[in-house]
Image 1: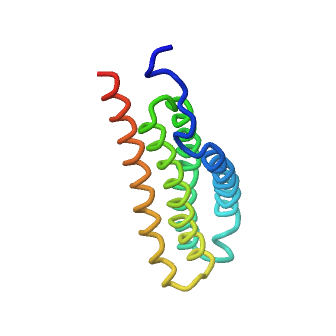
Image 2: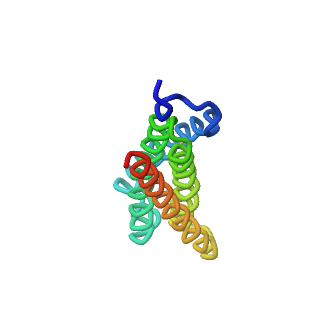
Length: 147
C-alpha cells in the first residue's frame, strides 16, 4: 500500500472529533427552533432588535453546524495525512466553540441578558475565523502533499 494512503492510527482523537458531530446536531436543531421562534412571535415579546440579533445568530449557527460536519468528514477522509486531519479536526472544534460563544452571546442578548455579555461575541467570532483558517491550512497542506 502506498505510504501516503495508509491509515494512521492516533492522528487525532476520533471519539472527541465525533462528539463534535453531536454538537453540530444541537447547533442545527436549536438554530432551526430559534429561527422559527424569531419568525413567529419573538418580536411581540422582545422587540425588533431581538429578532435581528436572533436572525444573525441563527444564520451563523446553521452555517457552522454544517461546517462542523464537513470538517469532521474531511478529517476522517484525509486521515492518512496527519497534519491535514489535525487541521480539519481543530477547525471543527473551533467552529463548535465559536458558534457557542458568538451565537450564544447574541441569543442571550436578545433575551435580555446583561449587555456586558456582548463582549463574548467577538471571542466567538475570532474562534470562527480560526476555524476557517485551520480548514484553509489543512487544504494547503493537502495540496502541498500532492505536488
